[in-house]
Amino acid sequence: MMSIDGKVALITGASSGIGAATALKLAAAGVKVTIAARRADRLEALKTEIVEKGGEALALEMDVTDMASVEHGVKRLIETYGSIDILFNNAGIMPVSEIDQFKTGEWNAMVDINIKGVLNTTAAVLPQMIEQHSGHVFNTSSIAGRKVFGPGFAVYSATKFAVTAFSEGLRMEVGRKHNIRVTCIQPGGVTTELPEQTTDPDKRRQLDAYRSQVRFLDSSDIADAVVFAAQAPAHVNVAELFILPIEQA
Ligand code: NDP
Image 1: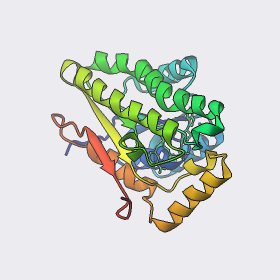
Image 2: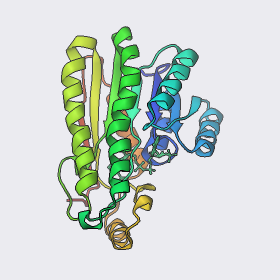
Image 3: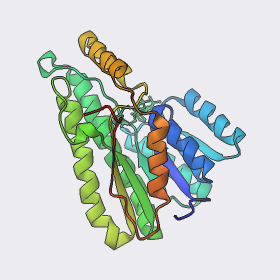
C-alpha cells in the first residue's frame, strides 16, 4: 500500500455523515483535510475533534452550487497547503417524492447539488491536479446510480446515474493523460442524516421503516473504503467501490 501521510484532501459535504467520517479517517492516516460544507458550526466542531486527535484540518464554509464559493475555497486551500492530492466529491441530498407531486424545487436542488456541485468542484480542483500530474478524485454516486429503487427515487437516481457516468468518462480522460485516479463510490444504505430532507411524510415513513429492517452501514464503513482506495499503489485505480449492507438486496 502507498502511504498517504502528508497528502492534502478536499472533502465536500464534510459537516456530517460519510464526509465527516472520511475526514476523521483520512486525518488519522496523516492527510491534511480541508473540510467543506455550508454549516460552519459543524465544520468547526469536526476540525476541533481532528486537531485534538493530532490531525491537521482546514474548515471551509462552501456551497458547491455556487462556483464563486467553490473557487474561493479551493484558492484558500492551495494558499494554505500548496497542493491537492485527493478530492472527495461527496456533498449530496436526497429529498424523495413521487413525480406527480411536482416538488420541482427539490428536483432542482438535487440537480444543482448532486450533479452541478460535482462538476463545479471538479472544475475548480482539476487544473491544480493536472499541473501536479497527480491526484485522486472520488465521486459519491450510490446504489441508486446503478438501479432505480422504485417510486419516489426517479430524480435522485437520475442525479446519481449522472455521477456514475461522469466518473467513468472522467476516469477515461484523466487517467493516462494526467495521471489522475477516479473512484466512483456506490454505497447502499448508510445511517446518516440523508433521509431528513424528505418532506413527503409517506416517503419518510418508508425510508425509516426500511432502515429499521436492514442493518445499515456506518459512515465509517465507507470511510474505510475511501482510505483503502487512496492507499492503493500508484499504478492502481480502484475505479468503483460498490458497498452494501449484507442484508440489502
Ligand atoms: P448527510 O446528509 O449526512 O451529508 C450530506 C452532506 O452534504 C452534508 O455535509 C451537507 O452539509 C452537504 N451538502 C448539502 N448541500 C450542500 C451544498 N450545497 N454545498 C456543500 N455541501 C452541501 O448524508 P450522507 O453522508 O449520507 O451523504 C453523503 C453522500 O452520500 C451524498 O452524496 C449521498 O447522496 C450519498 N449516499 C448516501 C447514502 C446513504 O444511505 N446515506 C447511500 C448512497 C449514497 P451542509 O448541509 O452543512 O452544507
